[in-house]
Length: 131
Image (cartoon, rainbow, N blue to C red; front, side):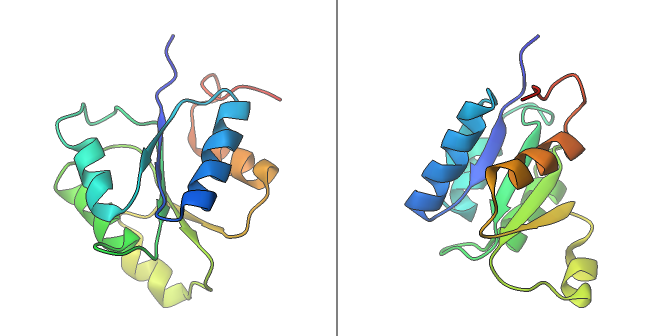
């Protein structure tokens, strides 16, 4: 059975490379979008369940992660959980404001095992490989 890829939305080339190589190490297929607009392009026209998870950077040029996540969920109706990646503190008000399209938050910098734990939390048990 094919494991659905994770969409990695990250404008920082170094961060993107670290995340994608970590996913590769875990045997998890992944696709890179370099900003919010690119993430919409990488979802447009695909089946709504194409991605197993979306890792969304929040602070990006052209379109921030919150706007991209909202459009992915409401306009493109993608079903994958969206995990926001951020280096800044997130207030309870911000979490509440975006809860309809942001499933959870992971704070940068994060370790590979923290990323893996987050992925396991939201992917079907049989889909995510064990260490």
